[in-house]
Image (cartoon, rainbow, N blue to C red; front, side, top):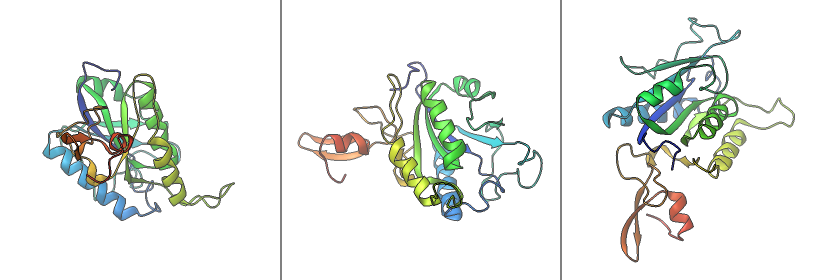
Length: 221
């Protein structure tokens, strides 16, 4: 459904999984493990993996805190986008990279949920990209010190909730669990989401994303 009819490809976007960014992140190890699985799956299907790396006055470039966590290693040839704003598209060459790869659909994971993840998701969809957030592959710090106080778990849950229903006239948001992301396989016959799984219908097996399956009144796949 993306606005880019001549850009049918998918890319995995890994945002800011840097030492200082995720040092105190909620469920840090599990989230990083899920991201590592996504990276491995994308590579096995020749799906581009695009790494985003933030720097600013507090997260200084070329310091240990700025570096990506040891559990995630970029391989030669995979693009890295250096940014200094929350939106990974802002003042970077991300759009040029995606255009060159003919990518119109993004699978997004990383940190932090209430900052660069949200900013990038909104930046993507208003530019015409379909942007799916992997619901168990992003995280943030505890926010109970804020006003009003909210926990990291609440921030993550709310982001997953509202992003599942985001739409524009030419693009769509959505969420998926890590286990449901199937790179290079079937797309949803209804909305062309890359996160389709087989569902039993009266007419036989249909490949649908969970959202379209729910809209059609189907239960478990």
